[in-house]
Length: 151
Image 1 (cartoon, helix red, strand yellow):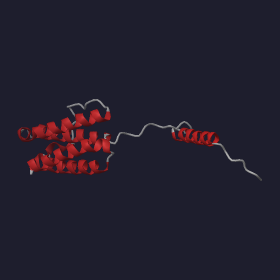
Image 2 (cartoon, one colour):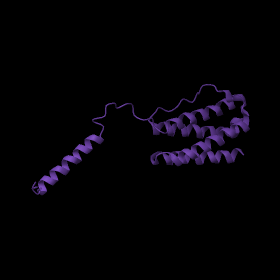
Image 3 (tube, helix red, strand yellow):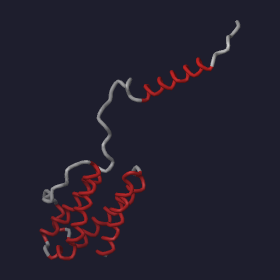
Image 4 (tube, one colour):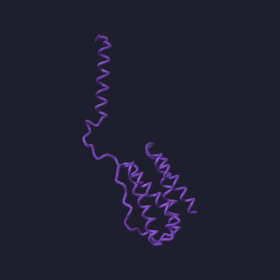
């Protein structure tokens, strides 16, 4: 069996055809089920931040004297929630969260909640995709500062 050499034009045409087929196969055109897009990795951090701000709101309602000392920290958490909402393209969270069971936490309880939140933000900043790492890193740094202020 004698094989004819292929021309450069034939080789180029074959390569272009293979590249186009590979591109179509990878673009999802032939996927049977598309499904919903994956959730934004910041969505759970937004919910946790709104919850944390709500913990402060509930503690302040139960012990108004805490507001003067830690009101700025609560305000930081609402600012974090606003930034996370903007990054996830969600509306800004309501400043009137549902009542929580943490109303009787006091300063020690708020400090423990703050420590947990700081650790969670720090760990997430190390593993989240780069586009979101800076935002979570700055939130983690702010929460670490809160822990120092409250300690």
